Image (cartoon, rainbow, N blue to C red; front, side, top):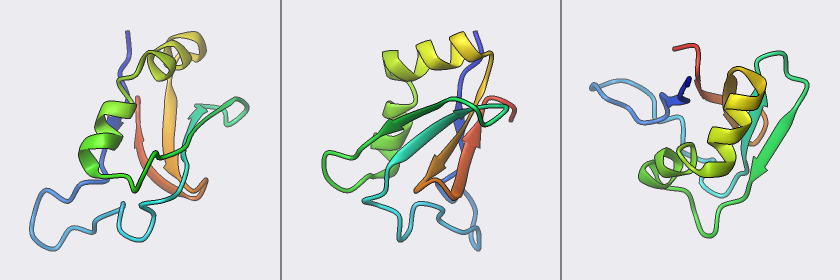
Length: 85
């Protein structure tokens, strides 16, 4: 099975925090062709840990398995991860 990996969290000094300013945005999971979508709404503001847990949820795992891979976005426009990393 392919897992979704996120790159939203800055790991080194100077790297951007891709979550910053998008904490209340939907997490959008798209298949690799951009044809099918799964939207997850935050219960409160997203944290990096919550995003990382969300992509391991049963719904996301099933979506990735069904579609053979996926990309993750915040607010439909901020790419934050993929199964292709």
